[in-house]
Image 1 (cartoon, rainbow, N blue to C red):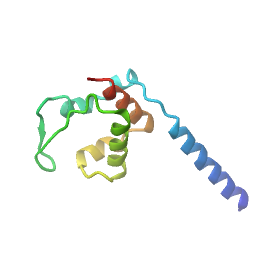
Image 2: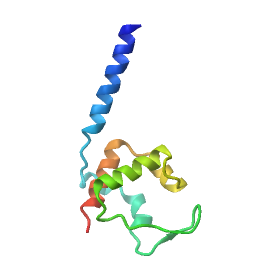
Image 3: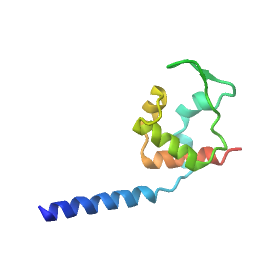
Length: 106
């Protein structure tokens, strides 16, 4: 039982360390941002689901902010069904890549 617990703890630490080492690659994100561009790439765009709201432009935002927002949508801490659905399908690497892509824009 102690060995099982130790292995689980070690696996959790290794998983956390691997996630912390994810580096964003803006070039890799070029094929990952198609869904983002449909709303976030249109100046003045307003979405109508679940209610009418102004969609923010995310180009030029800091990578840390974008990563944080996507992870909050993924966990359900931010409440938008469309963004939750999109973020839920993203890996940690996808999130880092998308964040790097938009952070480099001005």
